[in-house]
Length: 200
Image (cartoon, rainbow, N blue to C red; front, side, top):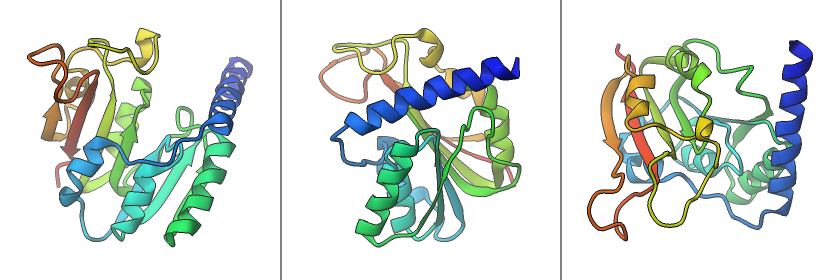
């Protein structure tokens, strides 16, 4: 069983390393974090989980939080380290398979997850928040309009209002999922946004 998990992790690592090696994108924070930066605490520790190129981590560090960024892809972490130097911020980076090594309990005031879905670690993310801590989450939904973006495998797409179920123990602060309502050319489509707070 462990060999199968190791193989799956290596395949994921290889896939994402290749993708980030070819990518010309610049790091950009998720909408859920950009829109609600004003909710962030002024001090504390923050984690950008499955960080990719680290747009969330760069924003968190610029906000003054002690910032950690973890990703399975060495290429992504290397590019984030270079970006952090360029932006003159400090980020504690780590190559880490967050699916098998989620954050330990009571570790962070803020956790941000964008465009990553591993349902099995949802309880660990809740436990990893310190009392009063915030979880910012944004990822793709199964209900989509227009050009389909993100994974094709429904296992990596949210069912309607699924984030509300996955993180039910948290106090709801923000939730946004517009589905197929109204003018499809406007608003947030094909993704759900969630901010929740752990009870004191």
